[in-house]
Image (tube, rainbow, N blue to C red; front, side, top):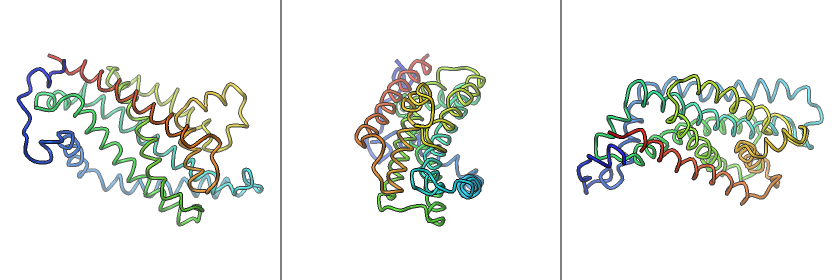
Length: 270
């Protein structure tokens, strides 16, 4: 039983926050974000611009034939959108979660209120989704300015980005709440995030990889997100079935949510 479940008084029954206490946690993170949003907004536009120019335009100038008949800039942009969503989701789900447990103890303060573990996880995850969505919309704006969006299905990309984010953030919440040192976070980036970014179809088709690495790419949630985003922005059929992609990412998110909620309950005890 969580600390909140054990000692919390009855929840207030009036007001939106009273009915949905997860919104109180989201509000806390949004209020804290007011102090840093300017730097985040600047990087949200600058990073995609530099990435598109550096990789799409710079490297693309040397890829004359494109990839599968698609100009390299158009090929790489949806992959970059998906990988950026993954990196932001992981970044917001590692050190902030570890900090709230180990260094500033925010979660324990929240657990001493009527909030339950599920509310604390859900509210913080909602903030992560907010961060990923705003950054991805900035990336889409840059992509549109470069003329890389070729289908009306590109309008579905923000929804796909949210699915990618939850499929990654929820399991990482479980991981971050289970470790006690940021050394493990560094290992997560070194042995999971970076390899996924390099070998999950962002920069080149996974079919060009050896069989073993190819199947590792298929297992990663990023490849499924990249394939969906590429199909949406280019108006092409994905390499795998759309329902299969969606169910696979949803499964990652659902299992991650269960693990994160269980781990938070275990940590937030008397």
